[in-house]
Amino acid sequence: MRGDGDGWAESPDGSRQWGLFGAAGLLLRAPLTGGGSAVLLHHRAAWTHQGGTWALPGGARDSHETSVHAAVREAEEEAGIAPGSIRVRGSRVTATAPSGWTYTTVIADAADQLRTRGNAESQDLVWVPEDEVEDRPLHPGFAAAWPTLRATPTLIDLDGIADMGAVAAALPRTLDLVGHGFLWLHSHGDRTGRTARIGAPESHAEQSDLAGNVLFLTLDQVLS
Image (cartoon, one colour):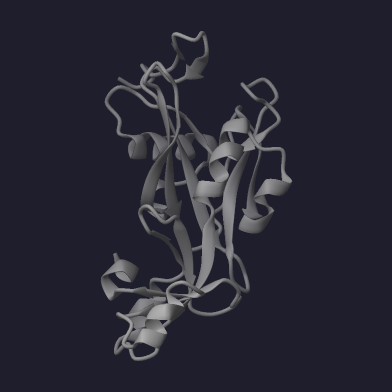
């Protein structure tokens, strides 16, 4: 039932967290001109919990919803982001409480920096360059989770790929290396960060690059 998750979950230690069935938020990325990524941040209205801080669009999960459904719905309600304009890439449980409450951050990306439309819970909605996120006064929960969520800019090497056009058309995007963080893939523009090559390393010299700035990916990983 819509709205049945609204309320405070109470833990034995006396702490309270918003969302009777847990909560979820959407970390949405889009490309910056010249390379790199921007993250959509939500400036919370003063009257809300932790008002005045910056965080992700998000809120309580209803009983019938998955975390993905809740995060995408909240992004539409709080930021005007149409579900069909984004693609979900992964998720992480980024906070827990003794009551069993969890907060799940759902990671998604868009082809460009979408126009936004706030509601009463928003002072502002801003696309912020990824390396400038920490410059703002962040919601404490988001600040604690951010180091595990930020993406490494990664230049994708398409040399030797027969259908380079199809691969390049799918970039840039977020790649979830489960257990190893996130990459932001691009094929042009800013060349800082790591380089990703498609295909297994062919020599010991290439294998040694895995410990440095070269990452080998399969084509399926890139196009998933």
